[in-house]
Image 1: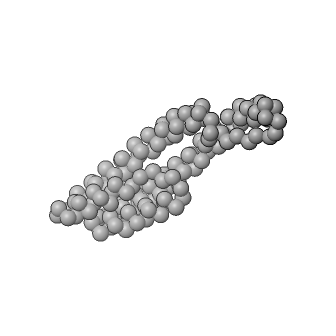
Image 2: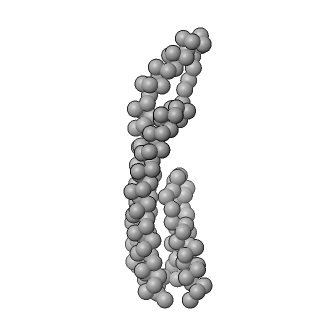
Length: 136
């Protein structure tokens, strides 16, 4: 029993927000691992299908957020590039990621997005815990 509980706790900590599409493959590995200790495979399969959709949506929202912020800061960056070009006498290309205001706005918005999705992942972990407890 203790081994199963330890195994479950370690595996369930691997359910995290992805940063890339390839991180989504980790979810399948977690599902495979949990299938060894959770008996209700149909409920677990359903939960992981929902989780996969949720995490794909998170990645899409994350990409969209970054694009929106880049667009919002594009005019400001263009003006700075023009000022620097006049100052130095040649074209200068700036990346919004180098701008402290952009970085601050990105961090703030990303934090909110992560907080929303982390709450849902916590519910998923709780539901998996319930299924695990029923399997003991």
